[in-house]
Amino acid sequence: MTTEAEAPPTWHGVMRQAFKDHGVRLVPYVPDNVLRPLLEGIHADPFFTTFPCAREEEAIGIATGAIMAGTRAAVLMQTSGFATLPNVLASLPVAFQVPVVMVVSERGTMGEFNPGQAIVCRTMRPILDSMGIEHHTMSRLDEAAFVADRTIRQAFATRWPACLILSPLLTGKRS
Amino acid sequence: MTDTIGNLHVMNRAALTKRLVAGLHNREAVVGGIGNSNWDLWGAGHRPENFYMLGSMGLAVPIAMGVALAQPARRVFALEGDGSLLMQLGCLSTVAAQGVKNLVVILWDNGIYQITGGQGTPSAAARTDLVAIARASGIANAAWAADEAEFDALVARALTTDGPHVIGVKTDSEPGRTQTDRDPIRFRESFMRAMAEAV
Image (cartoon, each protein chain N blue to C red):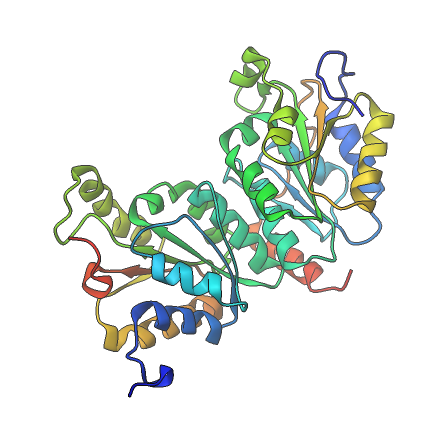
């Protein structure tokens, strides 16, 4: 018989625990189907304050304000939502050096059916690289806890935004 | 309180910013939106509880909302222009949905994109009532200030009653008289230190 404590780890369980380990309590997001189990887990956990925003830019603003006022925050979104962000990332968390942690469910690769999504996806890493925002693509469950923990740790230690990209190899939802 | 935009007295943003800041006595946070909103905030005299945006047009309200959520005991003001709010109208629903009680949005509505040369905004051309949009978004405490005295009264109400509050002000086209220092790290540091002080 399997108890809850012995249940196999999941990527969303790992992410939620990484947030808790680093005191990330505020999670504004724009929803995505791949993120659903993570969103549901965070909504169900009283440790977190979490809610949907109308745009990803807004969520970045909320997270930046909260972090400056003492509450750590992370923003959840999909690839196409990330692509709306270069101006606000450059002029707000990067310019002011506020460690907003972004978690992006990667769409547009590994069998994407929508050409628009496939093209948008190719813009994501160059945008992050151009601003010197460290990003790691999470593709393996056995590495997920380490990558999430260390990325969030470094973001707050160095006061710089960071981005975790959830590959379909990890989340397995898109085909 | 005034619900329509028909007979509103046109006021001066710099003068009202000074009036607002002079009435803050409890380390209230003030987030100045892009351009003249934060230049006039700077012109009213720097206080460490001020945050001056550099870019990110439209994000004064979301930034202030984040501060307000992190610090429910502190009043937090966002000073935002009409063109900026137009870029991020959805944030009004987000603010309303979360019922951010300690958040006050001051909307400076001059009907123009002043910094880029005074071009008219679509909302001015369409006679869009931005305060009515705030109310329709679910922010019940949203009103135009008819004149300086009513502005003072609305601010006093926002300081003493649960929000979120939106205070709309029709302003003239006088440009900002000063420009904020562009030193984001210094301002982030001083703002964070100020936010770490108890209210």
